[in-house]
Length: 193
Image 1 (cartoon, rainbow, N blue to C red):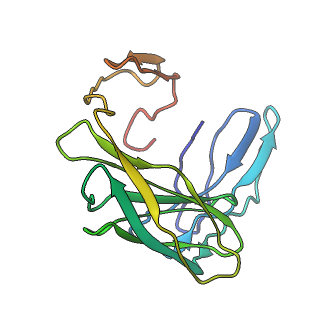
Image 2: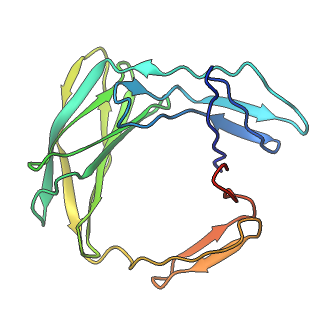
């Protein structure tokens, strides 16, 4: 379950949720702030009608660069392939490969990062993927890690779209057999939510 909101000019936020246990985190546009890593997630358990304040989420400045080459198997290097990285402490970052498959991504020390590659092959139903590569950063400031990626032929379904009232539940059956269930009110009903 994800319920998104944005902060005000002072960094304050408010999210309305039902009682349960949640991991609360924050993210910013990667292309505008590639040196900042998401805050560590905060686990909150709320009882019915409980309000919680004082939750602090602090972004971390990257202090390690992981770089390397994506080795494409079954296809030529795919420029602008998405290289993603998530950390076990809640950090996230992403970047894209250059025309030769090289990448460089910011991360944080003393954490375990999981890296991978995904991209579609233009004008086909093929895509490229990798298995996750695990990198323990320790106190290093620079780490080299190549990633092996392979072509998956005809692995993408043709694009499909539908419109529906977001205040009602929607079940979409795709042509490839995938079933997507969207609970009522899980999506915003206007440009603000």
